[in-house]
Image 1 (cartoon, rainbow, N blue to C red):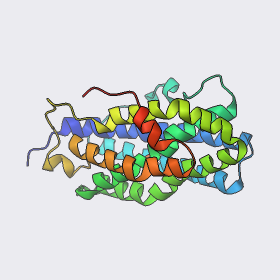
Image 2: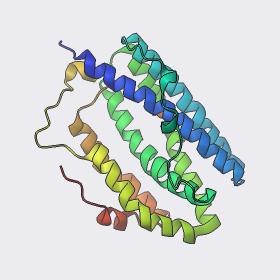
Image 3: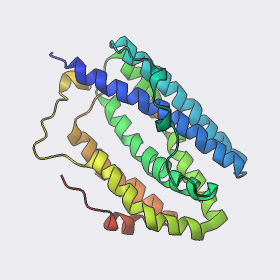
Image 4: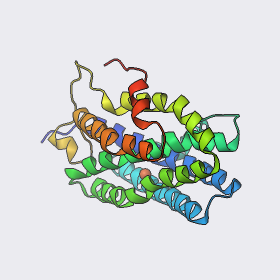
Amino acid sequence: MAVNMDIILAEWRARSLAEYRSAALGAEFLAWLLRQGFASDTLQLAQRFVANELDHADMSFEIYAELGGDDDPTSIQEGTLVIPHGFGGSCIERTVLACLDLYCIGETLATPLFTAMADATTESGPRQLLERIVADSETQGALGWAVLAELMERDSKLVTRLAKEQLPNYLSRVERAWGLLPEDWIEPVGPGELRYGLIPRARYKREFYQCIAEEVLPRLDASKLPGRPSWGKRPKNKT
Ligand SMILES: [Fe+2]
């Protein structure tokens, strides 16, 4: 079976950097939670989140190197390794924004995508890592919602105001990343690439809309935030 190693390598390079970045941002988020005296259980959850991301990053870099990648992971741009949300704002405001975007939306969407990637993966390195990521997904997905519940107890007015302002933008951005399939898209991922843990854009799209409808929006609504209304108000993306 013909396999396009270039796209496999590019994908694993991107995933390695994404896992490392997630560890760095998670560590910054943990420091904010510590500074604000969050509940011990929440701090422990955040610490486990960071440890898991570091493991995912190590395993991803190993896969990338085994596939023939030769960049040095330490060449990652330092500027990409900080939480950009609400820069210059108060610690609680920044925590709310990062919590909603990176953890409630981002990590909740990640779970079905990684599960889909694990589905047809037969190569041992990618398979081991994807199984580990799927096994960790309960912890990784729980962090945002645990922090959000505590933020709501502390200052529900502030959280609600920031959510109303920013959720439509955050939802629009993830739709652009995962939900869109350009009409002239020529899919490079076939059965050979599936074995290495890649999935086609059509699969991203399907998993994305299902998770938004069944997980993200209902959970935001259940947290007394405008999930469904924000989805309706999101800036429209062009395909
Ligand atoms: Fe991860």
